[in-house]
Image (tube, rainbow, N blue to C red; front, side, top):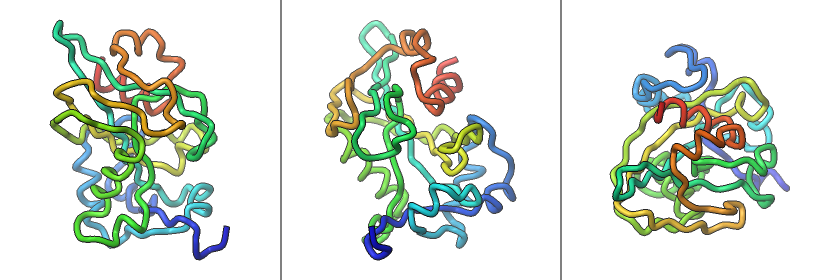
Length: 204
């Protein structure tokens, strides 16, 4: 892939994040970190290939949880298995409750906030969401225990859906469907690390 066509993704220097505080695992005080990060002149779009192996930068990754509560009051989350197509090969075959991906330079070409535009683009690429919802940012995830985690900073968004009308758009999102939080906790070991952290923090 030539330099001119390589995807450029939104990153922030690790040193800037550390100047605000320390994130290890799930951080519920999202605005303490995210507001200064998104307002910072330290943000930039850098070549994805280089950033995937450079822990001195953190890639900002929206991580959207789709929550539906049934008539009996039981909470379910949209869950899928990461397939073998594009995306992060180091995560394949793990179950996930989070939808999202990189913010690309293209997300900054129009009017509006590139982060929000990128989050909505990733969501619409990966699922067909046909329900109304309320949205809130509920936390940050940073997991330095592995190579993938060292270069990514997850921003956890919780969408509370009016109805469980969601379908996978991509082959990458196999076996997509709603699973009760109770069942997910019982099957916790099959989940990718970020999903485990989000589940533990939000549904303890």
